[in-house]
Image 1 (cartoon, rainbow, N blue to C red):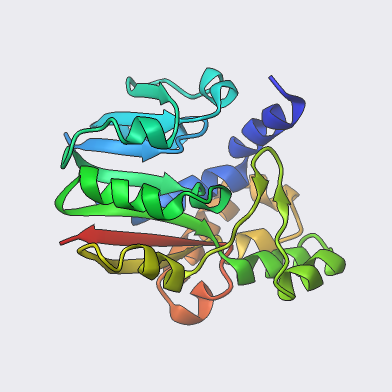
Image 2: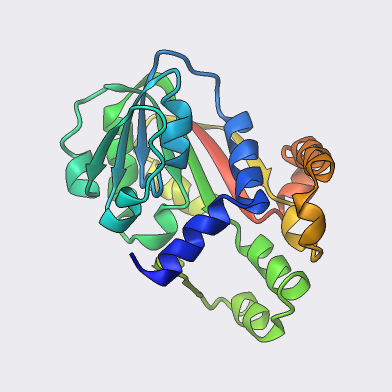
Length: 240
């Protein structure tokens, strides 16, 4: 197990990691006794959560992350990527999860086409992606890293710990990938608008503060002005 990967896992269990999952899970459509695909499942945190009441198939290429994955609930874990996705049956899933994955691959269009193939009609693909503007906000306000923020502003990319280069994309790119598919945009939510701008990490461990921040984040998650600066965007796409 690499030291960097261990640190990343530990951060997922800290308040800022917990808040991310709490917000995203709240934004997901309610499902029960459904068959769910979690593509790029990482440490299995979302797969494990959804496996409480659903049958979950998780696909993840990083074997180290799979070894460290959370498995309090039973789900099917597959080590692999696009090739293993292609082995899934047509119209076999009620919900597809793809969170913070497509930034790190150049096979995005092919992956989304496979999502369309394996998803049942009238069901949803949940995509969480980095927001370029939100990343710049965090670099300036939270990290005080003006040089990197200026580079991002000029169109440069950055390297993410453990995952490599971040290939930013926007809705117009997604729209290009799905233009020949019968998919519509149901909604776009912001995730982590204020949390990542708060420099006082100590207050983030206060349960009362956490609950208030969660309420605040949810209040603004569907407001256009605040979505523009959120750290992540959460797209819900429906196959029609």
